Length: 212
Image 1 (cartoon, helix red, strand yellow):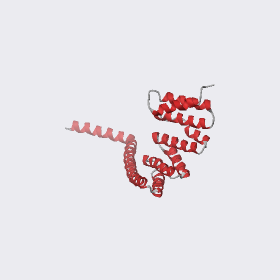
Image 2 (spheres, helix red, strand yellow):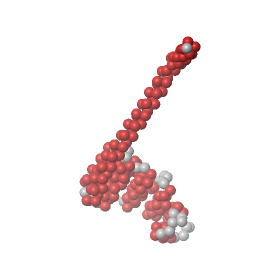
Image 3 (cartoon, helix red, strand yellow):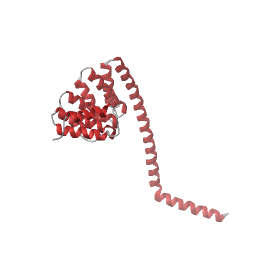
Image 4 (cartoon, helix red, strand yellow):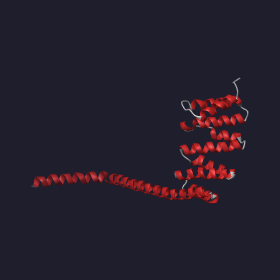
């Protein structure tokens, strides 16, 4: 019995020595891990809360769009951008509000809303905002501003539309050769796709005549 007591005492002494050497480190690691878990859970809770609140405001905005309440649309989109700008609802709201503003003839507000979505949106929403903003600039004959929005990379699914709109801007500037190149690039990106859109592209390309 004494033999086992001696072994147990040795094990205890060894454990005490190890703990004395590494106990603070182990405690620190455990503390950091626990804080990280708590922080991650807290962040997820915060994100869920933000998303829930943003969804409720977005629903109000959709109702305002359906009712044609321009002021409510504008205020709801503004609230989403200001308080919930990191959520997808904010950039979607900016697109909706911009369309309503455009249809109401308020181009200044529409451009501001589209600019916000282009700067803060993600993926498809960002590219849609860039396209629509470029189209507004084209309507206003602000060709350089339109080309700025069309510069840079876009998602593959939008590349044909970017190139087509770039061709429209260049054609409006009288730059036929460059416009022809943009339309051809649009056709290349739209290869394998049939329909009215591709036919319209061919018509635009043909309207520029033969390359010199």
